[in-house]
Length: 158
Image 1 (cartoon, rainbow, N blue to C red):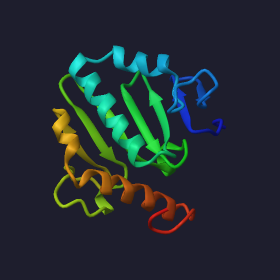
Image 2: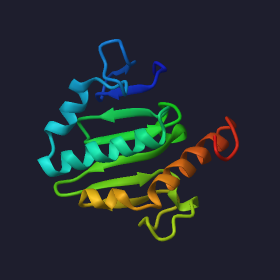
Image 3: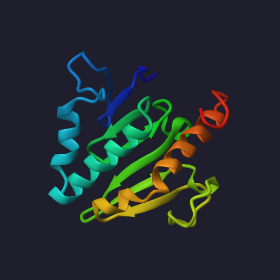
């Protein structure tokens, strides 16, 4: 069973939880753990990860952030369970970043997201300006509310 808390860091075999004020940064994630992920990336992509992460945490101050540094991915949710509680993710590539929505197919996104599968949709982020689309913050809020409603933890709006 994963420990509960605001942020979880997974390293293929173990999970650790961090809380602000206990050797972790104000967002609750060990700077060292985030640095491990960022160190694997091209500087421009690392900057995009920082900006996207900041956006998600600004929109949802209560977000649970799960890092998989070895895979170059970050999950965001209302809890640590990837398949049921996550609503968004970052997936890193050599020259870009995907900001994805785990249940994006069911969200009204006005053509902002790409994808053809049953559930997942993504925004390809190649420059920081891509994160400034005015539809993005409301979409993150809607995705969070959808997860809370699906889990019986509250209606739309959380």
